Image 1 (cartoon, rainbow, N blue to C red):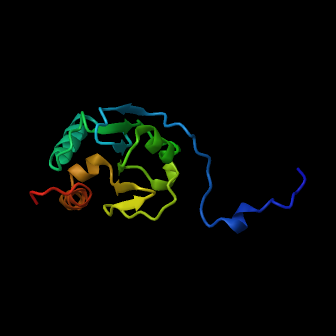
Image 2 (image 1 turned 60 degrees about the horizontal axis):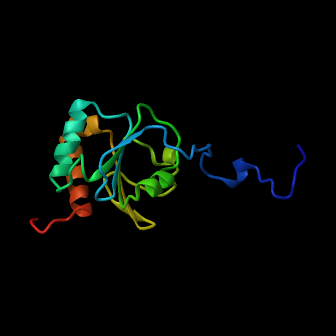
Image 3 (image 1 turned 90 degrees about the vertical axis):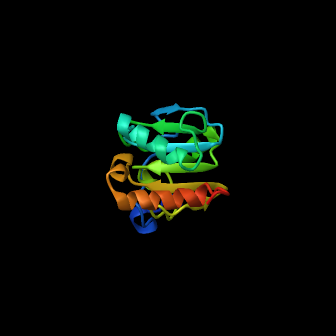
Length: 154
């Protein structure tokens, strides 16, 4: 293949891994999404993880069935989260067990520290099962959710 003036060797230009993204999320999306909250979890939660998520969300007055769009997949795959945010109209995105780069987010995110990016709040977290078994992770999640969903009662 002939070299053109715009050919730039990626090893010299990019300081991060480049991989193709599917524009389409190949998992399952459920829920009423009345409050434009996208919850992304990979792997898909088992019954106990789903109950745990429901309890955590209800503590900040978010109903797991009516208020959120729950996007789940059995295994990790590369996809475009921005596209998924657009499709769901999400204003808040809670990410459980997904690496930001695998879903096309090239923003500096630290776990349990909410980030506002292009008008959408993002929160990166461990897998639900890990959080359910770890008191420190539960505290981190609770603190972050209180920042994202403040109430007058607190």
